[in-house]
Length: 198
Image 1 (tube, helix red, strand yellow):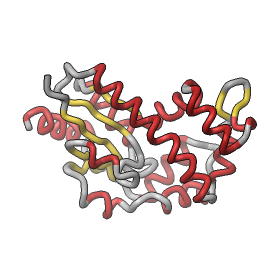
Image 2 (image 1 turned 180 degrees about the vertical axis):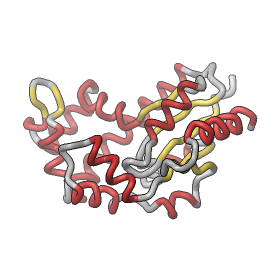
Image 3 (image 1 turned 45 degrees about the vertical axis):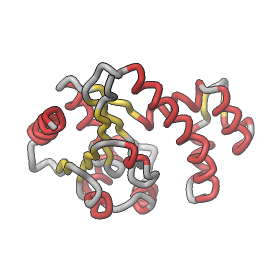
Image 4 (image 1 turned 90 degrees about the horizontal axis):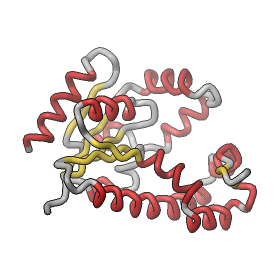
């Protein structure tokens, strides 16, 4: 049996990746949410939990739940710690994604949603890449409305650590404009139809 076509959905924080994926799901596509799965694995994969504790200490967990605030505080602005965390989390997510693919071999197309598909180079393992675009100020407003615990300074720092839309756009097979002045549903339907046909 041939494996399904693997399509990446990416974009900067606040661009609307999740909204785009929900539309794809309404159209019948199956989506693997890499960032959500990473959070799940960090609380349910014993090997990964042990590795996280080896970096951050036992205080990384409270009542068997990841102490996100403590871990985020330590990695925020500390490139070395963030890189160490990514080096253990990304392989675990990759294994989990491959397992998910084998469970869905009957599908023609599978989608993987992740913020850092380009930054990590994992987009190279996929057949197509869809980039969700939105202007920076619009993204900042969305994030501040969605995540009241973040400050504008926090958001701008996260954005500065991600590749620019221009850099990612040159690698994408499809661009979806989510600034609000074009129909998001119409754009997603068009991309979905192209993915199904090709």
